[in-house]
Amino acid sequence: MEVGTNIGRIKNRPVQRNNTSGCTGVSWHSGQRKWYARICLKGKTYNLGYFDNKDAAIRARKRAEKERFDQYLKEHQKAKIIDM
Image 1: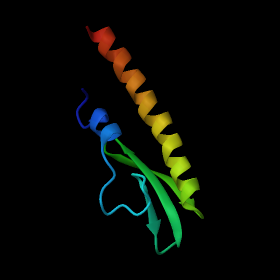
Image 2: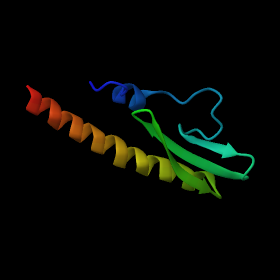
Image 3: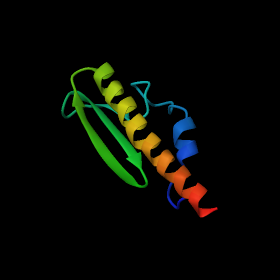
Image 4: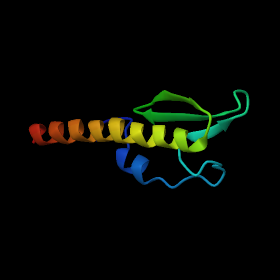
C-alpha cells in the first residue's frame, strides 16, 4: 500500500464519540453558524463547503467519499495488478 494512505482503515473507521453530526468529516462551525464538510486523503484536506443544514453537508461528504476514495482504490488496484 502507498505510503501515507490507509484506505481500508479510513473507510471502516467508526464515528468518534464527540462527533455531533453522526458523520465523519461533518461538523458544526460556530463562527460561520453553518455545517462544514471536509474530507482527507493522502495527508491533504479538501474543503467541501459550508451548508445551511446538516443533511446537505452529509450528502456532500458521502459524494466526495465515493468520488475520491473509489477513484483512488481503482487506480491503486490497477497499479498493484500491473506491478505483479
